[in-house]
Amino acid sequence: MELFSFLFGKDGKEVELLFHGAARQVTGSMHYLRVGERWIALDCGLYQGHRREAEEANRRFPIPPKELTAVVLSHAHIDHSGNLPYLVKQGFSGPIYCTPATRDLSAVMLQDAAHIQEEDAAYWNKKHPGDPIEPYYTQEDALAALSYFVTVPYDRTFPVVPRTSCQFHDAGHILGSASLSLTVDRNNGLSPLRIGFTGDLGRRGLPILRDPAPLPECDYLISESTYGNRRHDNPNDMKTKLAEVVTRTVARGGRVVIPAFSVGRTQTLVYYLRQIFEEKLAPQVDVFVDSPLAVSATEVFKMHPEIFDREAQSLRQSYGGSLFECAHCNYITDVSSSKALNDRKEPCVVISASGMCEAGRILHHLKNAAPDPRNTIVIVGFMAVHTLGRRIVDREPELRIFGKMYPLEAEVKTLNGFSSHADAGELDEYLFPLAKSVKHLFLVHGETGQYEPLAARCREAGFAQVTYPERGDRFSLE
Ligand SMILES: [Zn+2]
Image 1 (cartoon, helix red, strand yellow):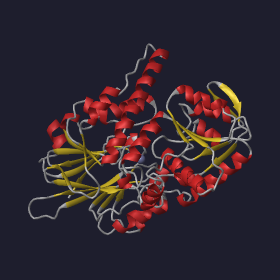
Image 2 (cartoon, protein in one colour; image 1 turned 30 degrees about the horizontal axis):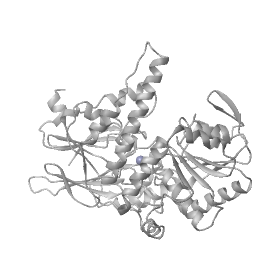
Image 3 (tube, helix red, strand yellow; image 1 turned 90 degrees about the vertical axis):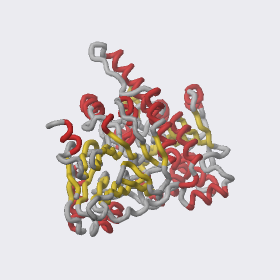
Image 4 (cartoon, helix red, strand yellow; image 1 turned 45 degrees about the vertical axis):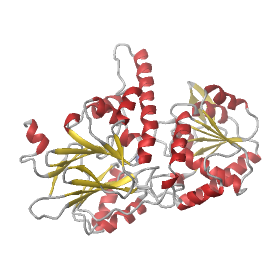
């Protein structure tokens, strides 16, 4: 096919969608919208998975980055934003629209992602000198990408390309997360085309964040389907359950170790622990947040109280301005203070990364905590198969950490209510009211077992057409 007709269709006039990332999977979110001769990318996520597949997915863009006019970014998670520095490195030089908090979190997270890639490449190249790899981008590239970010607050209409405007709606998923509604004006007296994109959808009742705002009526809708067939525990019970774990562990003279993602989950835990101690729901002990990324991300949270929910706003006032700091809360960045934690005898709470226990400082804390039955390891996030986190959830009697075996004698407590993704019921509640207006619903960001049952329920609820597109599928919108 000639490049022109591939890029712009036959007459360069119509509107179309091209699906690329997070199509029938959950990683590397990236969808394209063409309006006439202009291409817009919705998200530009990093594909995370096996090396060869990741190389293919991340290094090959279906639309040459120089031909792309703009990016609209739903939120700062790396599977939605993490390939932006590579896009810029490959010649993209247009605006990247997002909310102010998404820009500030991206500043922290993209540099962290670059740092991890640099370290991974150096490690791999040392072990495989005959098969060297290169990071997708460096920390310098990440900084360069940040200069293209243009921020727009929620609920304000902004132009993306000629004839096309957009609005962000709070998605309640992580700080700054947005669902998008796009409007494309058409000629010849036709009514405007309305296109919705959920981004990642949050849940009602998540701490700190406001509940997801409903999406306005639209003609075409791209929706996530991560937990299209799963139910989560109620987030409102998590504070009490966490307080019970802390109380029990402190009574045994042990420590609570919590592997947690540095952005979002860690701040939620500190927010709850602060309240638990203020409300005397558990004995007050020292809390250590041992993750440099979490420390930087917490600074971003502190900069954006304007988008907190009402409860967080009023607690912030009664705590004299700070939700994430107290006399017993210690943020650790340097390695020596992190190591010193191991020699502590008094009960305490340690929150550290990585979330799935695959790398980072949490490994040292787990290796020390696992063999002692007085301690508790609290699981607050999803643990993929083959990760150390999953082996802890499955209570394997021995854990291999840094090549040595350690008995798992500590209590293991899984708290399922912390998920920041809508579950099956919450997706239904959000999507079903749109069934009347939507002509075609596209389900993305999910796996077969999740999007198929959701698709079936959506058809039953009255959606005229429901599709789960594959990578490379194109749909013209009329
Ligand atoms: Zn997300």
